[in-house]
Image (tube, rainbow, N blue to C red; front, side, top):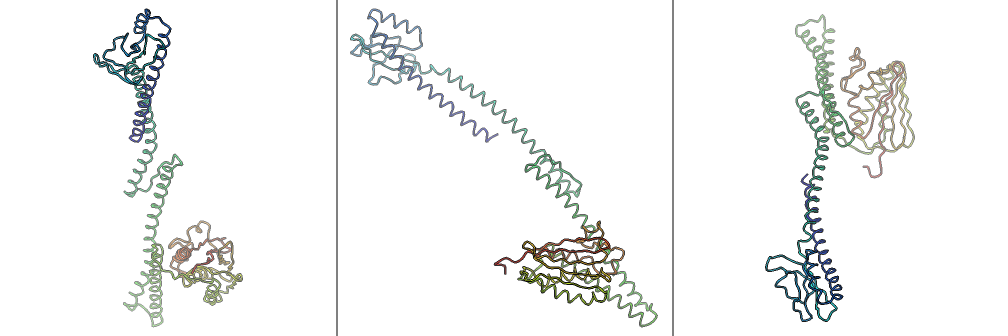
Length: 438
């Protein structure tokens, strides 16, 4: 509203000044025209008739008239005193008797007995019309102000109501009440902000649930190996074994569970560093075919033990990618070991090709597959589709979460496709290195 007034008040002032100046110019012009008109009339009138004519003119108009002879002496006047014909035929004059200001104009009369005729117009003759214009401008200004105030009030309410609801939602979220929903009524910036607020509430709720699930999962995952360690440790301390062979079995179990806990802590630490962006990578130009062949060699022995064949199909002359070779090998090793672990007497194959500027790697198996309800969550920490047999495969439940983080840190993407009972396929894509990447 202040901005509106800053625009409205100077505009009104300028309009008043323009009208006032126009009135003044019009009064000068009108006085000159009247003086010329009277000069024409007086040139045609005989001398004895001049005085009655002047008096009738004085009665019919608020203007005053003065006539001078050729020598400049006043012959007739209508109450103007103290005026002496000046050098200029137009100007302003103030009557010393009543201090009335006049605009005057003089015109030469084509008559031997009359010199000039002067017409005096009161300077306030047009004031009434100026006052009316000022009143009209004032009323229109008030109307415009009230109209602008109404529009401003309505629009401000449209803006403030959603903001107040968002403020209330933010306060609820600050108190930990995350079941909030701000109505999205528009598609403008306020509507987008409301939508973002709702997304934030959902993400915070998801984060809180994930955090609770994470602590629950960590405590659950640690409880099992620690219970084994404690139980078999007590058995060793109390010598509750029958012979040295059973004693060695207890020691092996303790060693295996300690190794499992150590791996879990190591994986958690690495995953935490990845998510916080504090995970160092030694990025360089890497050829995926070399990494795939080396990884295939590492898991070939385990695949042979499970009577599972490994097939590698790599397209010729693939360009390099920008990646950390050690971490890239960690990704493929994890995925291949999972494929081999979940495949009995089957087949695992790797396909590498170039598609639309990306190196695509497909790792497929003919294993038991993943249930459709489990597929969206396999990259979450501690999520296992094989809950009843999770420990049979010796994992920590963090492998695929680490794979996803490592893939994205190296500018790649990963997706999973699976058909229960027929197998699973992981599809990874990494952008090929551009010129100048080193």
